[in-house]
Amino acid sequence: MTDKVVLAYSGGLDTSVAIPWLKERGLEVIAVTVDVGQPGDLQAHRQKALRIGASEAIVVDARAEFAESYIARALRANALYEGIYPLSTALARPLIGKSLVDVARRVGAGKIAHGCTGKGNDQVRFDLCTTSLAPELEVLAPARVWKMTREEEIAYAEARGVPVPVGRRSPYSTDENLWGRSVECGILEDAALEPPEEAYGWTRAPERAPDVPAYVTIGFDRGLPISIDGQATDLPTLVPMLNRLAGDHGVGRIDHIESRVVGIKSREVYECPAALTLIPAHQALEALVLPRDLLDFKRSVEQRYSQLIYDGLWFMPLREALDAFISSTQSRVTGEVVLKLYKGAARVVGRRSAYALYQHELATYAEGDRFRSEMAEGFIYVWGLPARTWASLEEPPAPAPAAAPVVPAPRAPTAVD
Ligand code: ARG
Image (cartoon, rainbow, N blue to C red; front, side, top):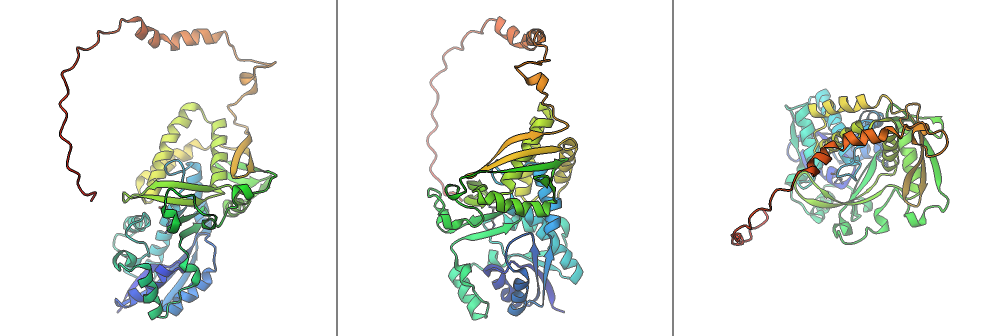
Protein backbone atom coordinates (compact mmCIF):
# COMPACT_ATOMS: atom_id res chain seq x y z
CA MET A 1 0.00 0.00 0.00
CA THR A 2 1.35 3.44 -0.88
CA ASP A 3 2.00 5.63 2.10
CA LYS A 4 -0.20 8.71 2.22
CA VAL A 5 1.01 12.24 2.89
CA VAL A 6 -1.25 15.16 3.78
CA LEU A 7 0.16 18.32 2.20
CA ALA A 8 -0.65 21.87 3.35
CA TYR A 9 -1.56 23.26 -0.06
CA SER A 10 -1.76 27.02 -0.70
CA GLY A 11 -2.09 26.91 -4.48
CA GLY A 12 1.25 28.70 -4.84
CA LEU A 13 4.38 27.55 -6.60
CA ASP A 14 6.20 25.91 -3.68
CA THR A 15 3.31 23.74 -2.59
CA SER A 16 2.35 22.93 -6.20
CA VAL A 17 5.87 21.74 -6.98
CA ALA A 18 5.72 19.69 -3.79
CA ILE A 19 2.98 17.48 -5.28
CA PRO A 20 5.07 15.85 -8.08
CA TRP A 21 8.12 15.91 -5.79
CA LEU A 22 6.32 13.82 -3.15
CA LYS A 23 4.76 11.54 -5.75
CA GLU A 24 8.18 10.88 -7.27
CA ARG A 25 9.19 9.63 -3.84
CA GLY A 26 6.43 7.05 -3.89
CA LEU A 27 3.83 8.87 -1.83
CA GLU A 28 0.13 9.39 -2.42
CA VAL A 29 -0.63 13.08 -1.89
CA ILE A 30 -3.75 14.47 -0.22
CA ALA A 31 -3.76 18.26 -0.66
CA VAL A 32 -5.44 20.27 2.08
CA THR A 33 -6.16 23.98 1.71
CA VAL A 34 -7.19 25.55 4.98
CA ASP A 35 -9.38 28.62 4.59
CA VAL A 36 -8.29 31.10 7.26
CA GLY A 37 -9.71 34.04 5.34
CA GLN A 38 -7.05 34.38 2.64
CA PRO A 39 -8.34 35.86 -0.61
CA GLY A 40 -8.45 33.78 -3.79
CA ASP A 41 -10.60 31.03 -5.20
CA LEU A 42 -9.79 28.10 -2.97
CA GLN A 43 -11.99 25.72 -4.95
CA ALA A 44 -9.86 26.57 -7.99
CA HIS A 45 -6.75 25.72 -5.94
CA ARG A 46 -8.38 22.40 -5.09
CA GLN A 47 -8.97 21.62 -8.77
CA LYS A 48 -5.41 22.60 -9.56
CA ALA A 49 -4.04 20.21 -6.92
CA LEU A 50 -6.03 17.38 -8.48
CA ARG A 51 -4.79 18.26 -11.97
CA ILE A 52 -1.18 18.31 -10.79
CA GLY A 53 -1.54 14.85 -9.32
CA ALA A 54 -3.02 14.92 -5.82
CA SER A 55 -5.21 11.87 -5.27
CA GLU A 56 -7.55 13.91 -3.12
CA ALA A 57 -7.89 17.64 -2.51
CA ILE A 58 -9.83 19.15 0.36
CA VAL A 59 -10.73 22.71 1.36
CA VAL A 60 -11.30 23.11 5.09
CA ASP A 61 -13.28 26.19 6.08
CA ALA A 62 -11.58 27.23 9.33
CA ARG A 63 -12.53 30.92 9.28
CA ALA A 64 -14.95 30.86 12.19
CA GLU A 65 -12.63 28.76 14.32
CA PHE A 66 -9.71 31.03 13.44
CA ALA A 67 -11.66 34.09 14.54
CA GLU A 68 -13.28 32.63 17.62
CA SER A 69 -10.52 30.46 19.07
CA TYR A 70 -7.35 32.14 17.83
CA ILE A 71 -7.91 35.81 16.98
CA ALA A 72 -10.21 36.22 20.00
CA ARG A 73 -7.51 34.93 22.36
CA ALA A 74 -4.79 37.02 20.72
CA LEU A 75 -6.97 40.12 20.99
CA ARG A 76 -7.76 39.61 24.68
CA ALA A 77 -4.01 39.22 25.15
CA ASN A 78 -3.29 42.37 23.08
CA ALA A 79 -0.76 40.11 21.39
CA LEU A 80 1.97 42.03 19.57
CA TYR A 81 5.30 40.30 18.96
CA GLU A 82 8.19 42.63 19.81
CA GLY A 83 5.49 45.16 20.63
CA ILE A 84 4.58 45.68 16.98
CA TYR A 85 3.51 42.57 14.98
CA PRO A 86 -0.03 41.25 15.65
CA LEU A 87 1.16 37.72 14.79
CA SER A 88 -1.24 37.26 11.89
CA THR A 89 0.78 34.58 10.08
CA ALA A 90 2.00 32.97 13.30
CA LEU A 91 -1.48 32.66 14.75
CA ALA A 92 -2.92 30.74 11.80
CA ARG A 93 -0.17 28.12 11.72
CA PRO A 94 -1.34 25.99 14.66
CA LEU A 95 -4.86 25.91 13.25
CA ILE A 96 -3.60 24.89 9.80
CA GLY A 97 -1.43 22.26 11.48
CA LYS A 98 -4.36 20.97 13.50
CA SER A 99 -6.49 20.70 10.35
CA LEU A 100 -3.74 18.68 8.64
CA VAL A 101 -3.53 16.32 11.62
CA ASP A 102 -7.34 15.86 11.56
CA VAL A 103 -7.27 14.94 7.87
CA ALA A 104 -4.24 12.67 8.32
CA ARG A 105 -6.10 10.72 11.00
CA ARG A 106 -9.24 10.52 8.90
CA VAL A 107 -7.51 9.21 5.79
CA GLY A 108 -4.96 7.09 7.63
CA ALA A 109 -1.90 9.04 6.47
CA GLY A 110 1.40 8.58 8.25
CA LYS A 111 2.99 11.80 7.04
CA ILE A 112 2.33 15.52 6.86
CA ALA A 113 4.08 17.90 4.47
CA HIS A 114 4.37 21.67 4.22
CA GLY A 115 6.06 24.06 1.82
CA CYS A 116 8.17 25.99 4.31
CA THR A 117 11.86 26.63 3.76
CA GLY A 118 14.54 26.01 6.33
CA LYS A 119 15.04 29.68 7.15
CA GLY A 120 11.74 30.78 8.54
CA ASN A 121 9.52 30.52 11.57
CA ASP A 122 6.69 28.72 9.85
CA GLN A 123 8.55 25.40 9.59
CA VAL A 124 9.12 25.58 13.34
CA ARG A 125 5.42 26.23 13.97
CA PHE A 126 4.15 23.46 11.67
CA ASP A 127 6.63 20.92 12.96
CA LEU A 128 6.07 21.77 16.63
CA CYS A 129 2.33 21.73 16.37
CA THR A 130 2.33 18.36 14.60
CA THR A 131 4.73 17.01 17.25
CA SER A 132 2.45 18.28 19.99
CA LEU A 133 -0.79 16.94 18.54
CA ALA A 134 0.34 13.79 16.76
CA PRO A 135 3.88 12.72 17.60
CA GLU A 136 3.37 9.54 15.57
CA LEU A 137 3.18 11.52 12.30
CA GLU A 138 6.31 12.22 10.30
CA VAL A 139 6.74 15.76 8.96
CA LEU A 140 8.21 16.31 5.49
CA ALA A 141 9.31 19.73 4.29
CA PRO A 142 10.33 19.33 0.63
CA ALA A 143 11.43 22.96 0.21
CA ARG A 144 13.76 22.50 3.16
CA VAL A 145 15.59 19.66 1.42
CA TRP A 146 15.25 20.13 -2.34
CA LYS A 147 17.65 23.11 -2.47
CA MET A 148 16.16 24.47 -5.73
CA THR A 149 16.51 28.12 -6.62
CA ARG A 150 13.43 29.96 -7.82
CA GLU A 151 14.46 29.41 -11.45
CA GLU A 152 15.12 25.71 -10.93
CA GLU A 153 11.77 25.38 -9.24
CA ILE A 154 10.01 26.99 -12.20
CA ALA A 155 11.88 24.71 -14.63
CA TYR A 156 10.99 21.67 -12.47
CA ALA A 157 7.34 22.78 -12.45
CA GLU A 158 7.20 23.36 -16.21
CA ALA A 159 8.78 20.00 -16.94
CA ARG A 160 6.00 18.32 -14.98
CA GLY A 161 3.11 20.34 -16.32
CA VAL A 162 2.63 22.33 -13.15
CA PRO A 163 1.24 25.70 -14.23
CA VAL A 164 3.30 28.68 -13.10
CA PRO A 165 0.98 31.66 -13.04
CA VAL A 166 2.64 34.93 -13.94
CA GLY A 167 1.42 36.36 -10.62
CA ARG A 168 3.67 33.94 -8.80
CA ARG A 169 6.67 35.49 -10.44
CA SER A 170 6.06 38.57 -8.31
CA PRO A 171 9.18 39.46 -6.35
CA TYR A 172 7.33 39.23 -3.02
CA SER A 173 6.45 36.32 -0.83
CA THR A 174 3.11 36.97 0.85
CA ASP A 175 0.91 35.24 3.36
CA GLU A 176 -2.66 36.35 4.08
CA ASN A 177 -5.43 35.52 6.50
CA LEU A 178 -8.18 37.32 8.42
CA TRP A 179 -5.74 38.87 10.87
CA GLY A 180 -3.33 40.32 8.32
CA ARG A 181 -1.03 40.18 5.34
CA SER A 182 2.75 39.51 5.49
CA VAL A 183 5.11 40.60 2.75
CA GLU A 184 8.75 39.57 2.40
CA CYS A 185 11.54 39.29 -0.20
CA GLY A 186 12.43 41.35 -3.27
CA ILE A 187 13.49 44.93 -2.66
CA LEU A 188 12.13 44.68 0.90
CA GLU A 189 15.33 42.81 1.77
CA ASP A 190 17.11 46.16 1.62
CA ALA A 191 16.21 47.29 5.11
CA ALA A 192 17.38 50.82 4.42
CA LEU A 193 14.81 51.47 1.69
CA GLU A 194 11.18 52.47 2.18
CA PRO A 195 8.89 49.68 0.94
CA PRO A 196 7.54 50.55 -2.51
CA GLU A 197 3.81 51.19 -2.75
CA GLU A 198 3.33 48.02 -4.85
CA ALA A 199 4.29 45.86 -1.87
CA TYR A 200 1.02 46.79 -0.20
CA GLY A 201 -2.24 45.11 -1.10
CA TRP A 202 -4.74 45.82 1.66
CA THR A 203 -4.07 49.42 2.61
CA ARG A 204 -4.14 52.77 0.91
CA ALA A 205 -1.09 54.99 1.35
CA PRO A 206 -1.91 57.34 4.25
CA GLU A 207 -1.24 60.36 2.05
CA ARG A 208 -3.86 59.12 -0.41
CA ALA A 209 -6.41 58.23 2.27
CA PRO A 210 -9.63 60.28 2.52
CA ASP A 211 -9.29 63.82 3.87
CA VAL A 212 -12.30 63.25 6.08
CA PRO A 213 -11.79 60.95 9.08
CA ALA A 214 -14.06 58.00 9.79
CA TYR A 215 -15.35 57.41 13.30
CA VAL A 216 -16.11 53.88 14.35
CA THR A 217 -17.57 52.62 17.63
CA ILE A 218 -16.66 49.12 18.74
CA GLY A 219 -18.75 47.47 21.45
CA PHE A 220 -17.01 44.89 23.67
CA ASP A 221 -18.40 42.19 25.90
CA ARG A 222 -15.89 40.60 28.29
CA GLY A 223 -12.97 41.57 26.12
CA LEU A 224 -14.44 40.57 22.79
CA PRO A 225 -15.93 42.84 20.11
CA ILE A 226 -19.65 42.29 19.67
CA SER A 227 -20.80 45.33 17.70
CA ILE A 228 -19.77 48.04 15.28
CA ASP A 229 -21.57 51.37 15.36
CA GLY A 230 -24.31 49.80 17.45
CA GLN A 231 -24.92 46.91 15.03
CA ALA A 232 -24.39 43.48 16.58
CA THR A 233 -21.78 41.47 14.71
CA ASP A 234 -19.58 38.44 15.24
CA LEU A 235 -15.81 38.37 14.98
CA PRO A 236 -15.60 36.49 11.63
CA THR A 237 -17.74 39.27 10.10
CA LEU A 238 -16.26 42.23 11.95
CA VAL A 239 -12.60 41.53 11.19
CA PRO A 240 -12.81 41.61 7.36
CA MET A 241 -15.13 44.61 7.59
CA LEU A 242 -12.55 46.52 9.64
CA ASN A 243 -9.72 45.39 7.37
CA ARG A 244 -11.49 47.17 4.54
CA LEU A 245 -12.60 50.26 6.45
CA ALA A 246 -9.38 50.90 8.36
CA GLY A 247 -7.25 49.80 5.39
CA ASP A 248 -8.98 52.43 3.29
CA HIS A 249 -7.80 55.03 5.76
CA GLY A 250 -4.22 53.75 5.51
CA VAL A 251 -4.33 52.07 8.92
CA GLY A 252 -2.35 48.89 9.57
CA ARG A 253 1.03 49.22 7.85
CA ILE A 254 4.01 47.84 9.76
CA ASP A 255 7.67 47.91 8.73
CA HIS A 256 9.80 46.00 11.16
CA ILE A 257 13.15 44.29 11.66
CA GLU A 258 12.04 41.09 13.29
CA SER A 259 13.94 38.58 15.40
CA ARG A 260 13.13 35.13 14.01
CA VAL A 261 13.13 31.97 16.10
CA VAL A 262 15.99 30.61 13.96
CA GLY A 263 18.21 33.53 14.92
CA ILE A 264 17.96 35.54 11.70
CA LYS A 265 16.90 39.18 11.75
CA SER A 266 14.54 39.81 8.87
CA ARG A 267 12.79 42.82 7.38
CA GLU A 268 9.05 42.26 7.56
CA VAL A 269 6.25 44.31 6.13
CA TYR A 270 2.71 43.70 7.33
CA GLU A 271 -0.76 45.06 6.77
CA CYS A 272 -3.05 44.43 9.71
CA PRO A 273 -5.79 47.09 9.63
CA ALA A 274 -8.35 45.28 11.81
CA ALA A 275 -5.76 44.14 14.34
CA LEU A 276 -4.28 47.63 14.68
CA THR A 277 -7.76 49.02 15.25
CA LEU A 278 -9.12 46.37 17.62
CA ILE A 279 -6.02 45.99 19.81
CA PRO A 280 -5.79 49.71 20.71
CA ALA A 281 -9.55 49.75 21.29
CA HIS A 282 -9.31 46.75 23.61
CA GLN A 283 -6.33 48.25 25.43
CA ALA A 284 -8.21 51.50 25.91
CA LEU A 285 -11.17 49.71 27.47
CA GLU A 286 -8.89 47.74 29.76
CA ALA A 287 -7.21 50.98 30.85
CA LEU A 288 -10.66 52.25 31.84
CA VAL A 289 -11.85 49.24 33.82
CA LEU A 290 -8.79 47.42 35.21
CA PRO A 291 -6.71 48.51 38.21
CA ARG A 292 -3.11 49.55 37.76
CA ASP A 293 -1.44 46.46 39.24
CA LEU A 294 -3.52 44.12 37.09
CA LEU A 295 -2.78 46.11 33.93
CA ASP A 296 0.89 46.09 34.77
CA PHE A 297 1.04 42.36 35.50
CA LYS A 298 -1.07 41.53 32.45
CA ARG A 299 1.44 43.34 30.24
CA SER A 300 4.13 40.88 31.23
CA VAL A 301 1.76 37.98 30.51
CA GLU A 302 0.88 39.52 27.13
CA GLN A 303 4.52 39.74 26.19
CA ARG A 304 5.07 36.06 27.09
CA TYR A 305 1.87 35.05 25.31
CA SER A 306 2.92 36.86 22.12
CA GLN A 307 6.26 35.17 22.20
CA LEU A 308 4.83 31.70 22.58
CA ILE A 309 2.55 32.26 19.60
CA TYR A 310 5.52 33.44 17.58
CA ASP A 311 7.62 30.50 18.72
CA GLY A 312 5.04 27.90 17.67
CA LEU A 313 4.17 26.79 21.21
CA TRP A 314 0.38 27.15 20.88
CA PHE A 315 -0.43 23.57 21.83
CA MET A 316 1.53 23.67 25.07
CA PRO A 317 0.27 23.88 28.64
CA LEU A 318 1.78 27.34 29.16
CA ARG A 319 -0.60 28.78 26.57
CA GLU A 320 -3.59 27.25 28.30
CA ALA A 321 -2.42 28.45 31.70
CA LEU A 322 -1.89 32.00 30.44
CA ASP A 323 -5.29 31.85 28.72
CA ALA A 324 -6.88 31.04 32.06
CA PHE A 325 -5.24 34.10 33.59
CA ILE A 326 -6.17 36.37 30.69
CA SER A 327 -9.71 35.11 30.65
CA SER A 328 -10.11 35.87 34.36
CA THR A 329 -9.07 39.49 33.72
CA GLN A 330 -11.79 40.09 31.14
CA SER A 331 -15.02 39.83 33.16
CA ARG A 332 -15.45 43.63 33.29
CA VAL A 333 -13.93 44.49 29.90
CA THR A 334 -17.34 45.46 28.61
CA GLY A 335 -18.24 48.79 27.07
CA GLU A 336 -17.72 50.92 23.97
CA VAL A 337 -14.70 52.52 22.37
CA VAL A 338 -14.77 55.22 19.68
CA LEU A 339 -11.89 55.35 17.22
CA LYS A 340 -10.97 57.94 14.67
CA LEU A 341 -9.46 56.54 11.49
CA TYR A 342 -7.47 59.15 9.70
CA LYS A 343 -4.47 59.13 7.35
CA GLY A 344 -2.84 55.94 8.59
CA ALA A 345 -3.76 56.16 12.27
CA ALA A 346 -6.50 54.58 14.35
CA ARG A 347 -6.74 56.69 17.50
CA VAL A 348 -9.01 56.06 20.43
CA VAL A 349 -10.99 59.25 21.04
CA GLY A 350 -13.69 58.03 23.44
CA ARG A 351 -14.61 55.16 25.76
CA ARG A 352 -17.36 54.25 28.20
CA SER A 353 -18.18 51.30 30.44
CA ALA A 354 -20.54 50.42 33.27
CA TYR A 355 -17.40 49.15 35.03
CA ALA A 356 -15.30 52.28 34.53
CA LEU A 357 -12.86 52.94 37.34
CA TYR A 358 -12.60 56.43 35.92
CA GLN A 359 -14.99 58.45 38.09
CA HIS A 360 -15.59 62.03 37.14
CA GLU A 361 -16.13 63.24 40.71
CA LEU A 362 -12.74 61.85 41.71
CA ALA A 363 -10.85 63.03 38.63
CA THR A 364 -12.32 66.49 38.11
CA TYR A 365 -10.57 69.75 38.90
CA ALA A 366 -13.89 71.55 38.54
CA GLU A 367 -17.11 71.80 40.56
CA GLY A 368 -18.25 68.56 42.22
CA ASP A 369 -14.79 67.25 43.24
CA ARG A 370 -15.19 64.54 45.88
CA PHE A 371 -11.55 63.56 46.23
CA ARG A 372 -10.33 64.29 49.77
CA SER A 373 -7.14 66.17 48.90
CA GLU A 374 -6.36 66.82 52.60
CA MET A 375 -5.71 63.07 52.98
CA ALA A 376 -2.92 63.26 50.40
CA GLU A 377 -0.52 64.80 52.93
CA GLY A 378 -0.72 61.83 55.32
CA PHE A 379 -0.51 59.41 52.40
CA ILE A 380 2.64 61.05 51.09
CA TYR A 381 4.17 61.12 54.62
CA VAL A 382 3.86 57.34 54.87
CA TRP A 383 4.64 56.62 51.19
CA GLY A 384 7.79 58.75 51.43
CA LEU A 385 9.07 57.20 54.66
CA PRO A 386 11.60 54.86 53.00
CA ALA A 387 12.90 57.71 50.84
CA ARG A 388 13.32 59.98 53.87
CA THR A 389 15.04 57.32 55.93
CA TRP A 390 17.46 56.56 53.09
CA ALA A 391 18.24 60.23 52.56
CA SER A 392 18.78 60.85 56.29
CA LEU A 393 21.82 58.56 56.48
CA GLU A 394 25.31 59.71 55.67
CA GLU A 395 26.78 58.67 52.31
CA PRO A 396 29.44 55.96 52.71
CA PRO A 397 33.03 57.03 51.88
CA ALA A 398 34.06 56.81 48.22
CA PRO A 399 35.98 53.59 47.38
CA ALA A 400 39.78 53.78 47.16
CA PRO A 401 40.96 54.33 43.55
CA ALA A 402 41.28 50.94 41.84
CA ALA A 403 44.55 49.65 40.41
CA ALA A 404 44.90 50.12 36.63
CA PRO A 405 42.59 47.57 34.95
CA VAL A 406 44.15 44.72 33.04
CA VAL A 407 42.98 45.05 29.44
CA PRO A 408 42.40 41.62 27.84
CA ALA A 409 43.99 41.08 24.44
CA PRO A 410 41.40 41.40 21.62
CA ARG A 411 39.99 38.06 20.50
CA ALA A 412 40.71 36.96 16.95
CA PRO A 413 37.49 37.28 14.91
CA THR A 414 35.68 34.02 14.18
CA ALA A 415 33.14 33.16 11.51
CA VAL A 416 29.56 33.82 12.59
CA ASP A 417 28.56 30.20 12.30
N1 ARG B 1 7.83 36.70 9.73
C1 ARG B 1 6.42 36.47 9.89
C2 ARG B 1 6.19 35.36 10.87
O1 ARG B 1 7.08 34.61 11.11
C3 ARG B 1 5.72 36.27 8.59
C4 ARG B 1 6.04 35.03 7.84
C5 ARG B 1 5.40 35.05 6.50
N2 ARG B 1 5.35 33.74 5.98
C6 ARG B 1 5.35 33.45 4.69
N3 ARG B 1 5.26 32.22 4.37
N4 ARG B 1 5.43 34.37 3.75
O2 ARG B 1 5.14 35.27 11.44
